[in-house]
Image 1 (cartoon, rainbow, N blue to C red):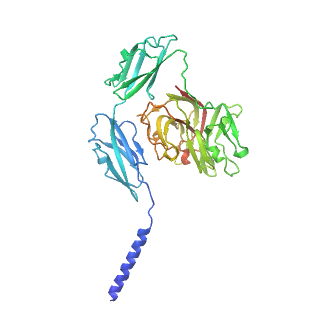
Image 2 (cartoon, rainbow, N blue to C red):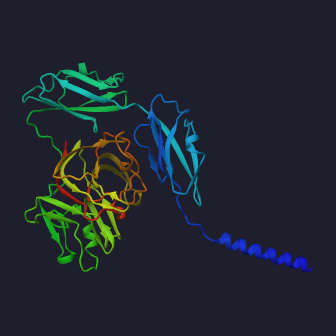
Length: 439
């Protein structure tokens, strides 16, 4: 009986101990693909945390049963199965399980896409000049004043790859009184617009985007400066608006007109620190709600319906290092969106992207001409891609119709590219002489 009693006690203790160990809650760590690429793919893979999907595009003609995954990145400490580097057949969706303390199932889709077609040379007899915008697939031809635009002849029409089919036939196209759309391979559109010398290309500019008009909101240490006339009618915002509500003795203003509000030559955005928190200098169009340095919510973008082909800005940047000898980077970007629905049902889609990010130490003002890239362009880098998991700027992928007009525009200037995560070099300074949208 003693033996049985001891065994029973030991068994009970083991069960109690096991129950205690199993009752300890595991942390919830989301398992995800941070990067996924296939040899020869077009552009950057589109990763959706919300849908737990990865979409990869490869050129038409690729054997989807024999692809090579060249690199992946997943959540630190997680395990993925099957091993993506050993999977070859992507003719159908492939499901991967990423294990942290929980299991997350991801679907990877590989889609074929027609090879992009670019017009490399376009001329009309008697023209003055041709401007080709590869990013927006648009061509503008300038003819002498008085030229009959209904009776023109295309003298040069070169494109790559030369095997692509095109409609209508350029040699049979003569009427350019309205924009003419040339369609390659039944799906890729290029638009040719012909104007007379001296004609002004109409297109909206964002109000106060020349940074020549400023106002001051508040007084003393809690004041801040923004381009425009007043806070109530202005569309420009900065992090200074929320931080100005902090009850601290000295608030470091991160955005200032230089040399003064009354005679501004340019805006100065500087990364500073307040109560131990990094505050990047930033200017953007949209709204900001809340107060403090961290407890704020931004809503980027304002209504806008034009299609610029590029933007021009003049900047001077001085980066500083931070962390483990990381060099800071400035961020300057323009994004066009198409928004559908409203409230909780609103969906925001990316239409076009123009982005400049650099850690270059500029010795003087430099003029930047940044093309607007429409759709999921092959030149887009991973940090430029839309994502629903981007808390600052959630987007539901790319808009299907690249020829559509936008509903909103986002413009952002920042002295520290990772400022939203409170990372940046104290003293990094971005000087900006406004921005112009080109059409």
